[in-house]
Length: 113
Length: 115
Image (cartoon, rainbow over all chains, first blue to last red):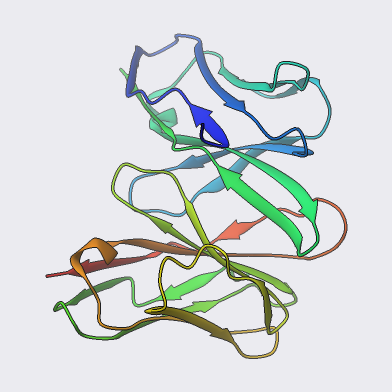
């Protein structure tokens, strides 16, 4: 079992749809949970990060963490064509060597106008 | 302000040649990470620097891969005797370091193609 699993996609939705992206993880040591957006031929950029179980909202984006189920989600409301990108979940823990990050494989999203 | 920069942006090389990839982190960021991203895949951790020491090299796939960092600035990733399976985008990220979460900032990557 991989440390972080993510719905592979690709996912195509019409403009205005609600998008749900999900990841599961196996390592209970993870303390921080992140969602990155990566446009084609660019580096990933941080969208949101959360620490505790529950919801965190930022504009059209909501990140949800359920530590008991080891499950995280990103919801995008009123999706726009500009949201078309690959979305990567990531988890982090502070270990002996400092902060380490593990990334999911990414879900490619296309929002069609 | 300046972000993380990487050079070259693209590199095409022949199998068996050595390549050197460069990363300039954000000034003041003591932590630096290298990742590999194959086409359609997620990020594969290669190596982590804290200052100029590399406490975690666990992700380097073979002894053909090595990396070094000068102080708390530039890092170079060297791949010797390149193979076709080394073709990927190599991403560098930097962050402040500490005992709590710090955001990673990514560079645009170097796209390596081994013919």
